[in-house]
Amino acid sequence: MSEQKPLLHNYFRSSTSIRLRAALNYKGFDYDYVAHNLRTNENFKPEYLAKNPAGLVPALELVDGTVLTQSLAIIEWLEETHPNPPLLPLDPVGRAQVRAMAYMIACEIHPLNNLRVLDQVRSYGQDEEGVTAWFHKWVHTTFTPLEQMLATSPNTGKYCYGDTPTMADVCLFAQMFNNQRFKVDTSAYPTLERIFAALNQLESFQQAAPAKQPDAVA
Image (cartoon, rainbow, N blue to C red):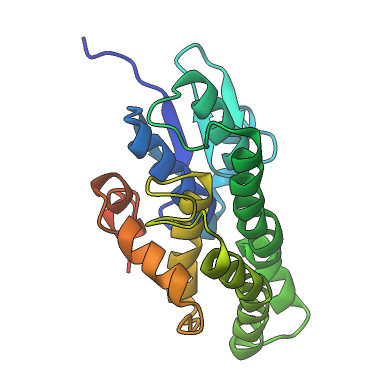
């Protein structure tokens, strides 16, 4: 009998799912993939709502049946239970700085640009051009200061903080895929583009990409 594994409930192109997959892969955390198609509301089926009443992805269902929700909370749990390789610096100031960059993406861009918000924007009569303009605005609003922070910080290395990936990097990695899907011009952010390219060289991050998932579609 094969060993039971935790279940990762997610969707191939959900940026929160991408960031969590990158973190899990980087830590070498083994899981079984469970897909929920957000476009067809599979995440609102009763069996999933019984596990996660919010109906959001990702969720990590542990072997004992415990269900963890919210990608950053799961990443924090992962950091505490599987500390190596670390996704946060050792010093408190460095940890705060990494969290701040991660939150800029996860708490300022994503909540305004996720699927249910974009669908709500459509419900107000916006066509796809208007929805795209909305998406672009909130990316640029946060990427502009983030680029400045990273371009001028002595702590910026190969990645957002030093020469090993952090929580900030998994968030950036995921956001860049959404940017590509909505054709956001990121040429004004050379530091962010450079870091994304470096992350794309890592096997653990490559395997987290949307196109590599079993539920990926064109």
